[in-house]
Image (cartoon, rainbow, N blue to C red; front, side, top):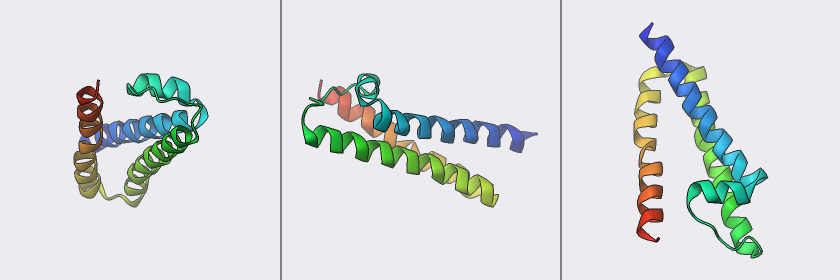
Length: 98
C-alpha cells in the first residue's frame, strides 16, 4: 500500500515536472509569468534560455519515470530528495533578484 502511494506521488511529480518543462517550450510567455522571471521574449537569448529550462525540466521528469520503470524505489526516493534543491534554489534566486 505504501509503495503504491509513493509511486503515485512520484508519478505525479514526474508528470508535473514534464508539464512545466513543456510549457516553457510551447507557451514561454505563460511559463515565465508562473516562474517569476519575465525576460524580453523578443531577444533570441531569452528564447534560448527558456528552451534550455524546458528541456532541463522535461529530462528531470523523465528521470523519475525511468527509475520507476526500473523498480529502483530506494534510488527514486533519494533522487527526488536531491532534486528538491532545484526548486528551492530557483525560488531563492528569483526572490533574491526581485
